[in-house]
Length: 77
Image (cartoon, rainbow, N blue to C red; front, side):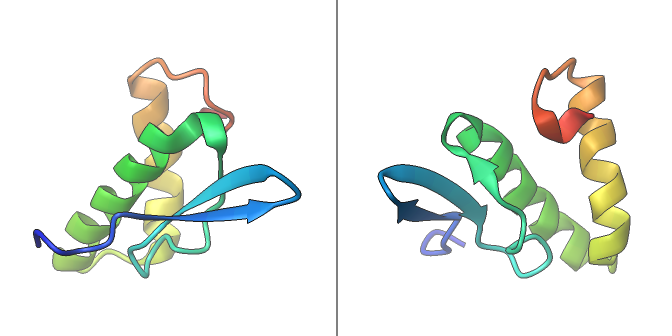
């Protein structure tokens, strides 16, 4: 787990975007100011994968977790 990739950074026209590395959430795109949310999504993907949850279930669970944390992120809406 120590050498595992957590997030991937992409740059397009000077704008940085972040994608979690876990295969369940690797298509989720986060803004530059949402790096912590991307890291959280990655680790939720790791735990979800270990427990047999699907990407679809995780896509509903992640915003609910952010709302519980009182996040103002677009992902919490």
